[in-house]
Length: 63
Image (tube, rainbow, N blue to C red; front, side, top):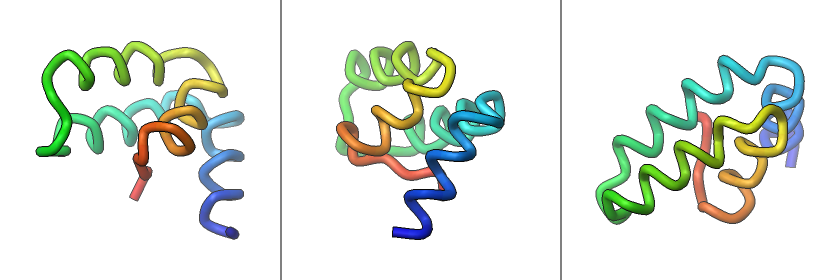
């Protein structure tokens, strides 16, 4: 739970860092197709909410 809270705060206040961490995780995922990767990168770009959606709905992580 603490890790999730830190990830949410990181996504809200340090979005560029969270976005880069999301992109690294998205590119390295083998089970995700190319179209899904592009869509999640686009979604993650939106300030604050994008990385949070990726964590909650995309099964992603920052580290």
